[in-house]
Length: 517
Image (cartoon, rainbow, N blue to C red; front, side, top):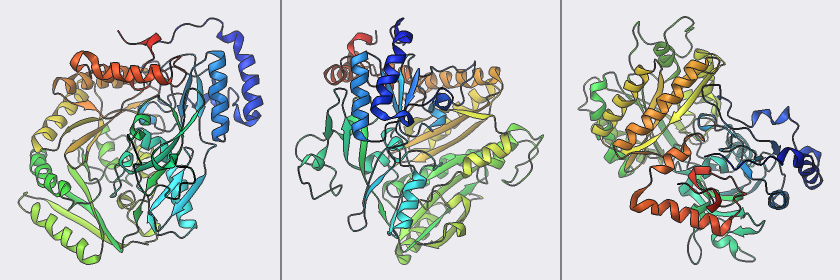
């Protein structure tokens, strides 16, 4: 859905820019050249996305308030990102034309780390790399949970229901209090943070009355300017590695063996189960020169070894870790031809001593996956991500993989494919790879994603997050009871932001003036 045309916008931009420079300083309003990155970095003629008319970078909550008030006065919408590096879902690109992008990278302070309480309070510009470095600099015995790439925002990833792989891998579930700027410019602090002279910090996730934190995740009801997050105590030891199988027909056996172990907590954190079809000519290794090799061979070099590789981890006292490992080995012992490949480290291990595949389950931010994609597919590689939630059963996983591989073959593409295991469901992560220098291949990637969304909906599945260009499509699937859920979201939007100033259309949420049909 496009924004309402505003022919006078160009005439007003100079005045708006002057107001923003006065509020933020010249350093807070980016030049056209500096603002170029705040669109979809993988966009081509085949996968177009809107671009903002201006980019601002406030450095404090007071400056965020000023931006919101100026936007209201001039009737121009904002689009907020934290780091803007969520590339597989559109980066910092907005849903609509004619918006000012509000990027929060300059709000990059780690405000509090409490080792005894096991939490941190951060601003939205703090990356996983930066939070990890601050914890190490303070010699605090806490671990963070990290996604596969460590350059993104801790708050931004959490706000998008992002996931990591340690015991606090459900990042949204680790939230304990927020500070939020509403469309009116008013500041709201949630939970116990609303108490004057609050002495509890982020020690509890809820205070008195309804818990509203989730309303500000995957929504456009406010701009998050601070967040409390629970962190994991540094374990005495941890074990990480993989269960590997080399036959696709054994996927159901592996999934069904792991499901009860994730649900009962034997496997700690969130396992990542990666699937890579066997290429003609054989698999390649990460450090191989894959120049001239097929796309599937390049994919095999990018991903962990094996037809299917289930990354698992255990944390804590050595005796408990050893017991968990023994239970897992027994649980998968019936799978023909399986391999269990595990490594054990002290909790305070030097990151340089950790196997690259174990960095993420060790809570160590890194860029290994992106480095491997660039090494084997080249610097122009892009990906359009499709990530449905499916049942944690072998039958559903096999059906999901067959569906994705069928569509990939139809469009002559390869897909970096796998599942993240949650206690009762799997998230099917599908990186539809394409060459951003090839508009036809980019168009095929987008068409493949559209087809997969349609096929998933036929099975009663939906994505847990989505690229900005398909968020409206995904939201439209939640149409039960006469669109009652979407009407509820619009009711909240009209109450909090009737003019639609904050990220209009984000996650399919619109004010009344732009409401879906």
